[in-house]
Length: 295
Ligand SMILES: O=C(O)CCC(=O)C(=O)O
Ligand SMILES: [Fe+2]
Image 1 (tube, rainbow, N blue to C red):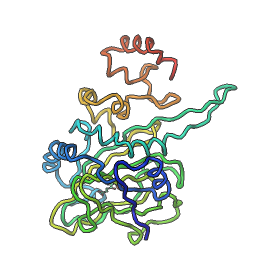
Image 2: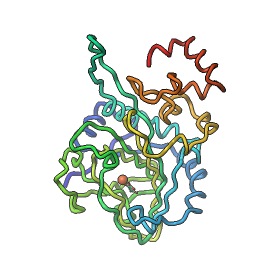
Image 3: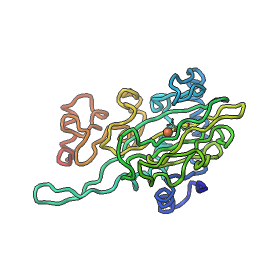
Image 4: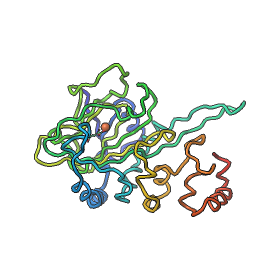
C-alpha cells in the first residue's frame, strides 16, 4: 500500500509539486505555527462547540461543521498563503492556455480562488464517510486538468484511531470507471499543526473515530478562478471582514478577475469595490492605474 509522504515547511516547492503530481497528496508538517493554531482555536473553537451535529449522513451525524471561516476569524492569511500550499496550487492549477484573438495567438494564465472553508470536528462514534473526490462537485471527467487543491489542517492530532482523513494515494490518476475501496486508503496521521494537501481528484473521506475525544480539522479549497466558488464567499464574508485581509487574500476570496475576463464588475477589476465607495471613484482609479486595458 502506498504511503503518504511527509515533508517539513522548508521543503523545496519543486519536490512538493512532483510528489503532488505523482501521489495526489502530501503531508506538510508544521504547516501552521503554534500561535496561529492557538488563535484559530480561540476564534473557531467556541463556534464549533455551539454547533449542532450535521443533519445529512454524508456530513456525519456525530460530526460538527462550521463554514464561512473567513468571516469567523481574520487569522487565515498564513494558512491560505502558506508557500507550499499556495505555491503547489498555483503551479498545478494555473497552467497557461494558448488562445487566438483574431490573428494573434497569445497565452493566458487563469487565476486561482478560495472555494470552500469548513472546520470539521469528528466526535467519538462517528463512522467513516463515503469515499469521494472533492472536484466531483464540478462534474468533470477524470483524469483531467487539476482544478482544485484541498487543504486539511490538523487542529488536533490526527491518528488512525481518531478519524484521520483517509486518502488513496495515486487515485487522482484513475478514470471514472474505477470505484474507490477503503482497503486502498491510508490514514493521514499527523500531529496538530500539520497540513494534508491533496488534489481535487484524489479519493478520500473522513475516518472513523474509535477514541473518546474529538478530532478537529480545518479544510480550505483553492479552485481554478473561472469556476463558481463552492461556498458563496460574497455572501459568507461581509465586506468589512474582507477588508481585514491583505490584497492577496481579498483577491483569493473572489475580488479578482480570471483571465481573459471572468468576474468583472462594471467592466472593471472587482478589487476596486474594496478600495472605493462608489463605482465612479473605482473607475477613475482603475483608469489611472491602466487596469481597464487589461481585462
Ligand atoms: O473530515 C475529514 O477528514 C474529511 C472530510 C471530507 O472529506 C469532506 O467532508 O468532504
Ligand atoms: Fe472531502
